[in-house]
Image 1 (cartoon, helix red, strand yellow):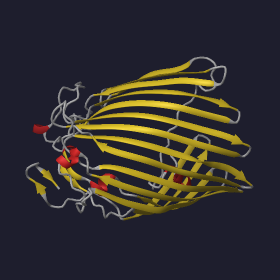
Image 2 (cartoon, rainbow, N blue to C red):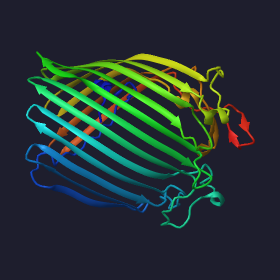
Image 3 (cartoon, rainbow, N blue to C red):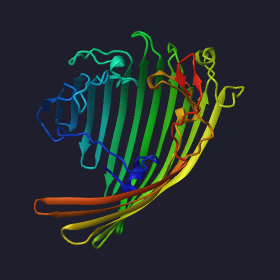
Amino acid sequence: MIKGPASVLYGSGALGGVLVLKDDDYYVDSNHLTGKFGSSYNHVSRGIRTFASAGKQLENKLFLAADAAYENHADYADGNDRVIGNSRFNTSTLRLHTGFTKENFQNKLSFTFNTQNLGIIIDEEMKDEQSLATKRNDRDMQLPYQKVSDYLLSYDQNSFHGKTEIFLHISHHLNLRKEIEEQYRQTDLGLNQNHTFYNTGIRTHLGTIKHNLGLQGSFIKSRNMENAQEFLIPDAKVNEHALYYLASLKKGPLFFQGALRYDYRRVTANAGSKNLLDANFILPGDPENRKLSREFTGFTGSLGVTGKINSESTLKVNISTGFRAPDIAELFSNGPHPGTSRFEMGNDNFDREQSLQADISYSYRKDRFTGTASAFASRLRNFIFFAPTGENRPEDNLEI
């Protein structure tokens, strides 16, 4: 978990911090084939997860590795042992890695494939006569559910020159998402999304201050599947770029860290495809060219200090401001969402969400005892949320 100024490295939307997951590259320094295998059981959902991984470093410092996992869950039971219908899910994952490491250079190329089937719990689930619960150990997917497939190709590179490090990350992510409501071979909602992301910059230590300067951005293209029966959002493109700077200073028992980030985002919606024309999908204001664009800019800033009161006690204080631009659905959605039993309408006049927050924490550690107390306060302006209009669509039995 990363909070405070360092969170600006992961985007302006990280208002309260970020959770960073890192690969366990245990095989990088192994000259022999090394692997792991395991399985776990979840009593609440009677779920079983099995995983395996193997890797090896070759003589030329090139490494090869693979990971695979499969898990399958039945419907889970709540605290009263009531089975919650259609909470079942299953997922399969395959990851392949290769790269090489040298004294002043390292890189890694990874490919990940993941597929999931996720049951959707209906609003009427807690009514016994409408519950979708079946046999306790039933794992077959039932309507409604989501089918999600992900393909991710990523490349990381780091080079070291004395006290300076130059880094580069490039990735491309393909996400295929279907929501299946009425028939198993029919796609009610379907979306294809391509996302290319880059992050490059330099880290250096000059005098007593560590500097981290970087450029970050992404290109997202979303397109509705042609065979979908309903359309919730239009086709869209999102271009986003950011410049960030992070400085760190250690002075005696105090550690200071400050960061500043500037983001630019342009969102363009397009309702001109044949399937959206046939569905009479309307953008806000019904523009003649069936296109709309919005731009968002803003600064994210943070300042934090950590102090060692004594050998057992540590005090941390952070204050920051950040923003989150509205997403495509919040701006341009205009269609039924069967999974939530509502007709969703966006608002292209939404402004960015802006936050001001502060947190303070105290940690005490001595011998075998560790304790932490923390407080967090946040003020959010232009908060975006779902709100009923009081209207309904009798033909679809949906609230708006």
